[in-house]
Length: 323
Image 1 (cartoon, one colour):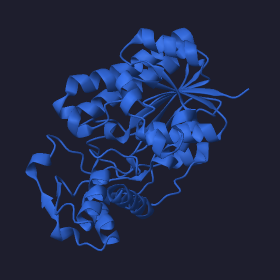
Image 2: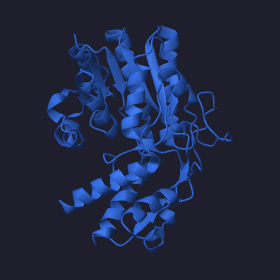
Image 3: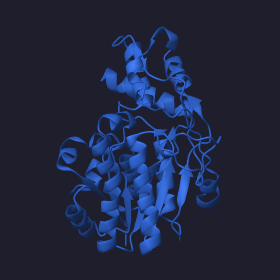
Image 4: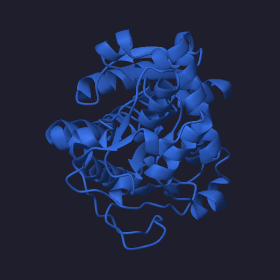
């Protein structure tokens, strides 16, 4: 019989790519959606041509009863919790909501799983932002956390709740400490997509400038398709565990933006505006992951370079805007 998977946050970037992967592996895929997401948020699934292949279940990670009903409906072998308020910048303006969805939502899913499907395998999408203010060159599974935003703090709570439920109740619960991962399906409120969309707009004469904050911060960027493959591999292991998923390479925001503008024959310096209003109250200067454990245990490694990913994103934005 085909395996069954339940994905929260199914209409997001990672949820869409994960759905595509699981369907290709022969799974029955169920997606938990709030009503508004179900009606208006399936654009990414449609972009991938799989919207009619994912069975939507109405529910909310803040409503334990709806979670238990969703689990009873899906009867999942695997549950992937990707639901979150995932914007670092927005988390400063909405810290309580971020804490509820991104933090308490994890506890709600774990509790519903414990009650209704304790044998199902669980994946939690943790984040490199948990490391925050770090003094080590590369962050691995043992690096102490120092979150620098409400988003990172909420994710840290969810991460440790995953470990608590694994150790306390024997759940097959794993967490991926995911470094930045992008794609043409990324939202416009994330810096990579903001950059590629601006490069495309300026090239087509639809805009003149790109406004950014701290362009000297450095991140470890990979492709979302590679990262959802790591999520799936974690739940195929006999024992649950936590893994850093990263490329091991760090690049500044400025250098990433130069890749996008170079691709369309533009000079970034002619269009970049540094806007002090876009600086965060507390920023993370540099993140670079050490994926050696994932490589050794999961057999995982990234397949898409930053350069190829940015080109793919720019081309997708050019196509969208021309249409």
